[in-house]
Length: 163
Image (cartoon, rainbow, N blue to C red):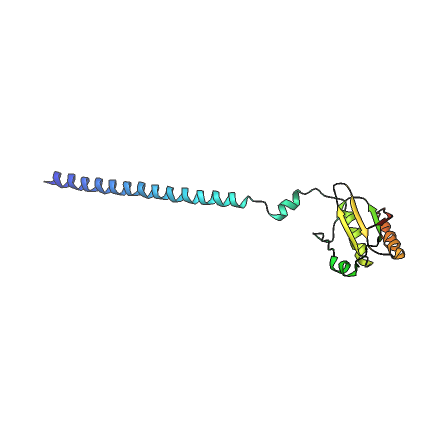
């Protein structure tokens, strides 16, 4: 009888041990599944974060010898004023064309200088040239603007044109 009780206790302990081990393995599988899901989410976040930000793009830009005071260049042409001044008879109008180098620094300085002298102008940028038409008869003011551009090491020439 003692033998049967001992065998029964060992059988119960063995069954309990099997149940405990199987539950540990099933928890381990669930744990592995949750870890793999978390790893997938983390990989997706890393891929989404790989989009370069503005400062990363800025860090990759080549440095230049000059810096702008603003980010965007804005050109405004006020044609309403000129349209109101025109008459029915077409009279050739004299304007001045300013010839300068075609780089962003020169364009920026010319724009700001002409605005500071309150000179109406039209700037057209083509592949390798900038065409700047100054719509003013005041040659003294234009000459002062050219002298100011020389202070910025921008060589420019003035040419009389008929519009």
